[in-house]
Image (tube, rainbow, N blue to C red):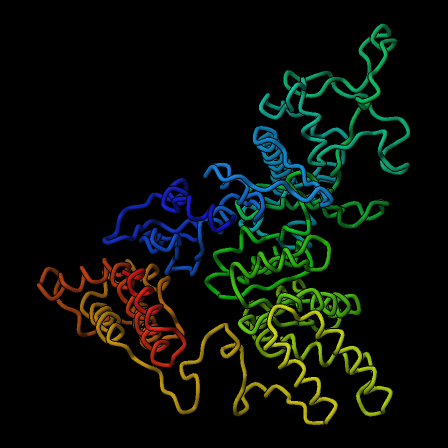
Length: 631
């Protein structure tokens, strides 16, 4: 059924709703990539394959993948919407399966709107607090103290606040009631926005609060605003005597009060939830408070910071998974922009699958304490059923007593990157060492028996890749025979640094096989290198766009990047006079770099297909079919 839906959908039409596409010769369409910032188009759509690919950031997939990322929908939601548009009937769901109720489009739109309005209210409150301490450094009170916490204690910069839309929930019970809510936020049949706000957990009914959630006597509610809430208390004795329908709560209170607010966005950039950090230390409330599950927010599917980190993840070809909001925020502030956090729980399979759509390299970074070690083990067990040989999953526990926020502020980005490269342990070695620690070693028969029982339990969960499961089995058996392999130390011969674990492919994949320089590399990449020397002024103008298209694992393209970087130090002596035929040819080559690289990538695919046919990995028929689709 899914294949039938995909066949009926025109990917050019689907992508064209979000990207301005232009035909680029043959059966290809090209446009500016919606997943990263670029000025020269490197995003292509191939109708014959029903797929898209960006040579700049590496984003690729089909129509389903595109809609999931652009509109922030789950796989099932995307398939259902596409089926409806394509006129394909979806079989009735299993009557025994749990029913997931999706709000109608207009209700969902209202929910997203109230979240955005609330976020603007919170960011406005924080901006006012920061202005207060700038104009009155000696100001007192909750607002001033909150601003000092953000500016002085945590050192959050304004650019970081803007990037993550960080805000402040005032120390009050009725902040959101002060807003004039537009009619678009009203639920169908309702005369105010209360139902919508309650449905996304921005407000809660007073009857449902815990005994310590609100004062015994609630403050009087303000008079009704034009598009706001009705008064929480009757306006007159006559009104007081009127019966209140039991289904309607008497009044509401704000869910988030006296907290630093972190908006949580889906992959489409829409705010679906909030996280709040307590700012009144003697309060009885939890240190961190997250939105409850709502029709637009399922915490097991969402990762904090993923929307902001998408481009950096694709560029770095890896992602760091940390534990908290502040870890993500401060890592980004110090230059580690490819970090995300789970929503207050251990990593779920759904969250991991979402990350693996962006990169196959996932580094879990945990605090250096007992809780961090426990979380690391739980994450490893969650990941294991999904891991394949193509994935590079690593675990890093920081030095005792530190979290990523502390570490990056104290030591900086370079030190953090060096720590990850030197100390992050592959998932296999991490699990092996954890089992050895839990069993007290593998020396006595009892220890060895416990070790064997536990690793057999681990292997039962490895259903995704049986070949990898066999390699795990060999590794565990080596522990019992005393011949286990240990990872080489950094700098030692045969060192397996991150460059050989998927972050950067090695230039030579085996001792006996040298890198292959194709005809496309010698002609296209060399042509651009020559153009850089002839017309360096033009090269400087388009340098960022060219670098964004380079594969730095490729020796020829790495040399081109070095030539471009060297322009900051000195202009090449071989440059030609502006306007000469040589200079004009160089200029044209530099300005058409995207088209040249498209030809280059096709040549690479053809060479790979030829190698696969020669080695017998694909049949001649498949080889011919792939070449035809390539165009």
